[in-house]
Amino acid sequence: KQEVTQIPAALSVPEGENLVLNCSFTDSAIYNLQWFRQDPGKGLTSLLLIQSSQREQTSGRLNASLDKSSGRSTLYIAASQPGDSATYLCAVRPRTGANSKLTFGKGITLSVRP
Amino acid sequence: DAGVTQSPTHLIKTRGQHVTLRCSPISGHKSVSWYQQVLGQGPQFIFQYYEKEERGRGNFPDRFSARQFPNYSSELNVNALLLGDSALYLCASSLGWSPNNEQFFGPGTRLTVL
Image 1: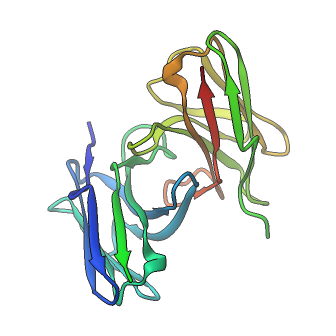
Image 2: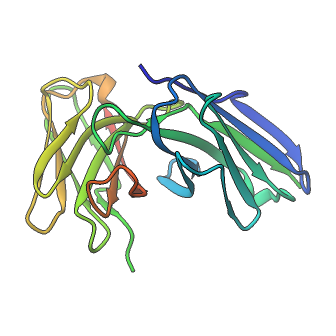
Image 3: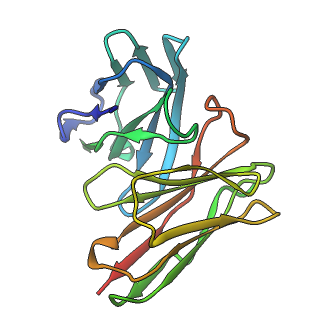
């Protein structure tokens, strides 16, 4: 059974710091991995999608990497801002089961202090 | 273009009642999935529908059911509500059936069962 882990559960950093959020998964048989942002009480905003054949994806100040063989992904946020404060979830699409099924971690709650 | 829309935004029910949640996918998207997110946890997969047919079901009791309409909108129904059904219910749409399609989530419906 695929399990996704995100540690630590919460992180607080000063504004301007570059930071890395980690995600690990137990089964490397995945189609892709997706990073999401969730503001309190809100839905999920897709940040980056990395297909299993890719190593990384970039969007603005965000860069996500994928090491499928070791079951790890990182989300790098450059020059963090208070507006980046949110919960960041990673999710994998396993190669078994329903095509649409995403398996999520519990998320990392990020607080960027002004 | 409008994103995924869900209604209602919030809902309060009592134990034993029935609830219907609605979702409209992004225009042109034919696949809809439903997820349940309990406070402090990552979303859990409930159902996937594509072209009006159920294509996947998560580990939820038969009290949960769903359907997709010819215009690709979808309903999630929950019977005999329990306190534990209190959660944020998220709908996600994607272009098609391929697991490589990116998932886009709506704002969610917050269900409170008293």
